Length: 136
Image (cartoon, rainbow, N blue to C red; front, side, top):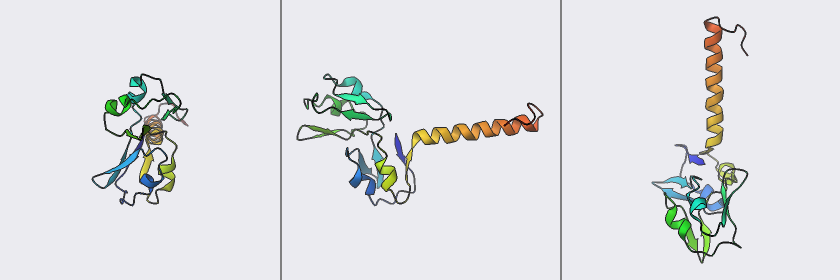
């Protein structure tokens, strides 16, 4: 999932460049699909699949435009445009790449950063109290 930080200035480059139209403005901040998988679980035609990046993609050959995904989406991100499902994030990263303010953040990177900080903190504590001297 991509989050928008307070750095967002509302220029909308992420919205204009999102290939799946998964981003919209809410209170002048970019807001997007959470990649929760509710649409994937609900699709009666198995037309939505999870890709290797953790996002979701619609197989247009299987999609009949029934709208179950649209009604299932907990944040109302999904919409149908002439029977074509839009608003599902594929986690392609375009939004992060085009944002000049670097306001779009991949939450997977946040988790990894927090894990690194925690490990470094534990190493400092271990070295301070004498456990595992020289822990690296």
